[in-house]
Image 1: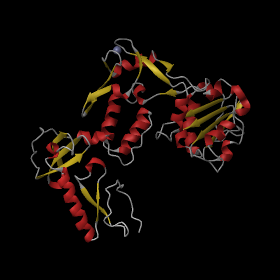
Image 2: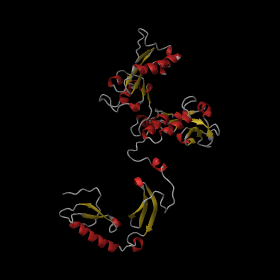
Image 3: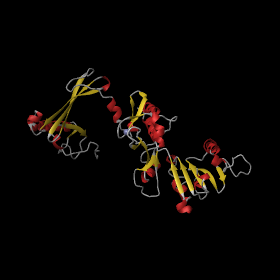
Image 4: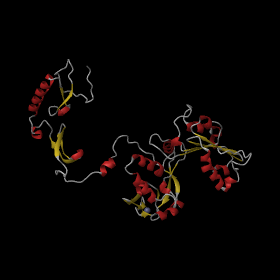
Amino acid sequence: MTVSISLASISRARPWRPSKRNSRQRIDPLIEESPALKERVRPARARDSGNTQLSKDFPGGVLVMTGANSAVGLRSMPARYVFLDEVDAYPASVDEEGDPVGLAEARSLTFAHRRKVFLVSTPTIRGVSRIEREYEASDQRRFFVPCPHCGAMQWLKFERLRWEKGKPETAAYHCDACDERIEEHHKPAMLAAGEWRATAEARDARTVGFHLSALYSPPGWKSWADIARDKETATGSDEAERVFRNTVLGETWIETGDAPDWQRIAERREDWPAGTVPAGGLFLTAGADVQKDRIEIDVWAWGRGLESWLVDHVVIEGGPARPEATGYDIEEVDRENAADTARAAEIGLHYRTSPGETQGARATPSRRPHPDKAGDDDGSAAPATETEQE
Ligand SMILES: [Zn+2]
């Protein structure tokens, strides 16, 4: 911590007004356990020490802790060092004065090139995450470690962690270069021989960014087996997967909205030969999609609870203009459709044929007739969502 090496005022902001408990649990032990800090920062309880729980005096400076939800706290004094903790949890605007990160950064402007602004956070959601935005504008440093087998320097990626399904204790890392198994006990030597390397060019040469996931946790902390176990526990729940990505991998979560998770659907698929009806199929339906140059037909088997199986997929080359493709004389179908349209109009229904080449092969009841246009169906394309102007 800077207190021991530099004389300066430091401002530290957390998402919410810091509680005395937070200071007691996180800052006080830090000072207590660092001899260099302990001899400079006097304990809060000492009389006239100038120190309270949220403000720590030391020779040449002061550490002030404030919350990102208070504009007054954020711009109350100039600070050469600004430390912004958990920035992804900051509000978008504070007391109608704007971005809390901007407010806090402004405090250091007086110090020009000697200032330092340090942002830290667990990332949240892609597109919303401040820390991801900041990291992407930086030189994007990753911690490269050597493979114990081939020596290739690489940064650790979750995709390279492999284990037997249901047995997270078998988890091992696999080298990017030689694909050999790297075990948990290799980690201390790898971490000791590691180094930060930039993986991008920063938009502003003075901005550096560091990313570290739980895959780097030193022995005794979160093991690779623990991470595999966390992943298995989280699978199947978007909320749990999001927490896993954010807190274990340090990656943002991509919101999928209401779209189904393709992976979960893919996991549920079964194998059966084409053209056979699996056990449980009670009846068959077929649907044809008529295109200019071909007709595509799906045959589905249906069981209880609307379970369904695709039994066959047939492509007939040629399209509706060729009787040998459809088995129908298309002009005859058109004549029948015209008769249907007229009959429907008599009872107040309006038939619309589908656009393009599908015309003549399919007719769909779509809307009530317009009083002036009854029976005047030219088959032109009409979007399914069109509403009738009465
Ligand atoms: Zn290797």
